[in-house]
Length: 185
View 1: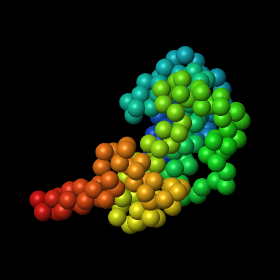
View 2 (view 1 turned 90 degrees about the vertical axis):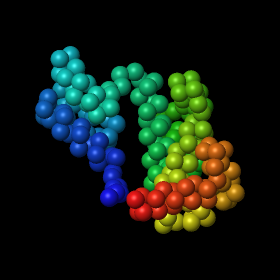
View 3 (view 1 turned 90 degrees about the horizontal axis):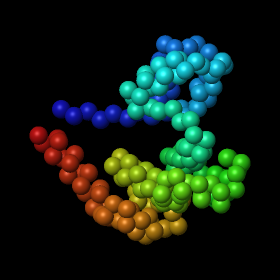
């Protein structure tokens, strides 16, 4: 028997952070899943204890400012792609305004550190979201195209095939066959 689950990654991360940090110190505020504000400086021993406790969950502390900025760019993109609200400005303007840096600087830094462009990272996230939506069977390709801010269904289909090697409809057929196979076994 298979059961399917849905979970909130943000809530899950906040819960893990809260549980693990309370073991070490009570003087903190979780600003968001990627930022913690400690009300006092931590000793090296406390920092190492926290690093060890979080590493079990695949959570690591970033201490390089460029890496922090890259993570913030990724977080903004994930937030944009995975939320149902779209900003009234272009993605580049939105990212630049959120981080108070020029988009040229952010784009150059992102490419230098990740070896891919912001635009490519956005496409990867959009295709992942499209796959999740296609698997849910609750929305059409036209609705997905609109939700992900594509100019047309054809544009989404072309990017989907370029990134995955198959068309969105082929992806849906594969998911449907897998579900049927699970039900029959």
